[in-house]
Length: 278
Image 1: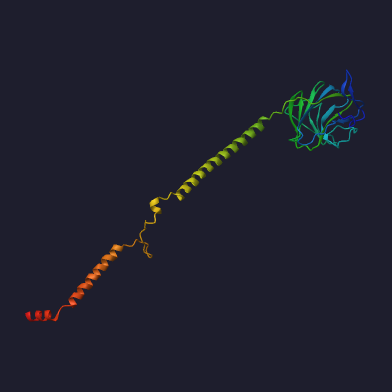
Image 2: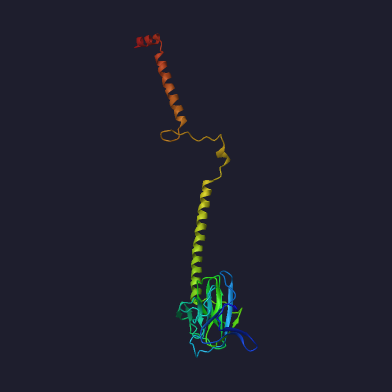
């Protein structure tokens, strides 16, 4: 704990029999850590052992958690997280959460703390989350979306005696069954979508390959030769033109012209002879 940032009725003892932070008097007193936790600075774990826990004068007994790094209300007769005081904390006597003056249920089962218990605190600066533990047993997610920077804090009253343990080896918070199921469903859905994408991509690839092959057929040497002539087509109908037919018609026409010419060239004597005989 920071030796300057604490209430005036708090003293820290390092004697052979008393070690930790001790409160004197009947008013609430708050102390904060000398270390400031910034965003994305890692995961920080610490614990507070309830060396002496007396609830005869106050029903809360002790309240611990985190506060903004600029917290200065060490002498106010209220715990952190109470009305008018910033903070995100857990109440040791009931195991409930305290923030903004509101007390809320916490965890699946009610878990109050007693003398000798260790209140574990796990701050994840990457995710902005705060988990609480009871003797290394995870009580669940306490707060999320925390602002930074922050400091660790402790508020005690009426001769309480607490001891800080830092760092505290506590297990990683396990994911709940519902969160695991949700993550599994999301992963399965993503896998099915990816599978559909792969199948669609392969199908499209085969189509593209077939199209490219049909458009890029290899050209044979005979088809590329300049001596190969395609049949001529008629501009009107596009039907191949038959040259042999024209040749036959021309020969027949020439033969008819020759026959006519021969008939016209018959001599006069031949005509007279033919007439006498008649």
